[in-house]
Image 1: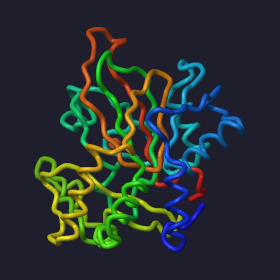
Image 2 (image 1 turned 90 degrees about the vertical axis):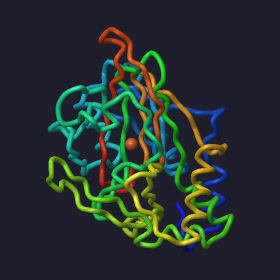
Image 3 (image 1 turned 135 degrees about the horizontal axis):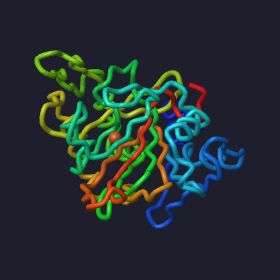
Length: 289
Ligand SMILES: [Fe+2]
């Protein structure tokens, strides 16, 4: 693995040469999520090293439980799991349409589209989500497609256009998310930070981004504005964007790449309600960090 700063051109070539193609999306077959074989681990780790993500398919979808998915997460390096507001005690969230409770009103718990983002973009940098896992228990009869793009490829395209654009998005105050206030109480303070930064513990590129346009503040700077509009263009029209709809038993693991989800429509029976398990971690996949 190359350092994206000191060995930039080699890193760039490697990333472009090993990127996934929409026409050749591959899934790693997994026999038992409780005990990944060396071969399965090596395949998953190669995909993640190449492109920051991997897709997998359980040979037996019925083996998925919160316990087995948590075990699988641990085996791929997700040791320290994020306990977000809506996660269960085992740190695994069930993403599904919720009409009641605390999750109500959060877009991941509705059937609405989720615009491009990295997870936890509102977290402080010392709590940056370095990886997440999304496992499909049930899909919806229509919609719910995931959009994915390895953020390394976005950085490369900005840098190709002008290194100044990439640098502009590394400023520590480039993107500010205002505080989260619930019932008059501040549950999260305002958070300023870079879009791209070098994570010193893993020597890798991390991204912090949301495509939402309301309630966020971009630094007023010409290069920032140029870079942000270039990202918006790339996300609507780029060969590097991948689309995939997870089916029951299938999942995504990634180093918190940029992603989104299309709206979906559940069916009328319990077996047609979209349910995803999600785990988030402060650890990078397969890094020991
Ligand atoms: Fe997300």
